[in-house]
Image 1: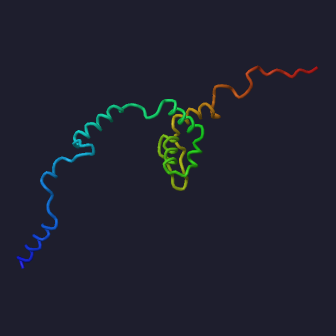
Image 2 (image 1 turned 90 degrees about the horizontal axis):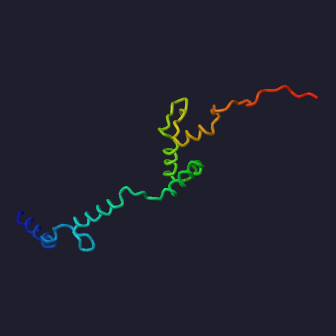
Image 3 (image 1 turned 45 degrees about the vertical axis):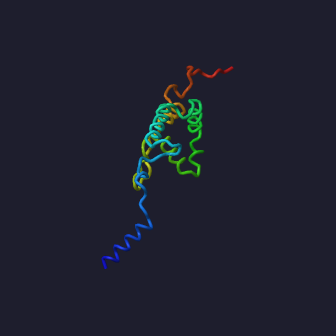
Length: 140
């Protein structure tokens, strides 16, 4: 019985020989470089671009102003990522929900708070009535 197992093991070993020892050296990447050298080059390339903006300031500003001008356009998108971005950019905190009451008043992000302060009805810089003194009607 043991002889039969040994014979089966030997047959399997002949069918699937082990790779030569030299094949277990450090992995190589395309181009003949060693893995370590390729990793150093990749890190160096990343370090050169680190801290640089992906887009120009004008492009970033244009995108931000387009969003602030019409967030509903992005909310109407079919993409889930766009809707998540709208929630993150519009509200400073997560939306609070109370059972049987609904959503609480949300905390808006800074750009929307600034716009509300400029355009809102709570503007207390001027009196609602006229500036000049009230006068009697002129009767002729």
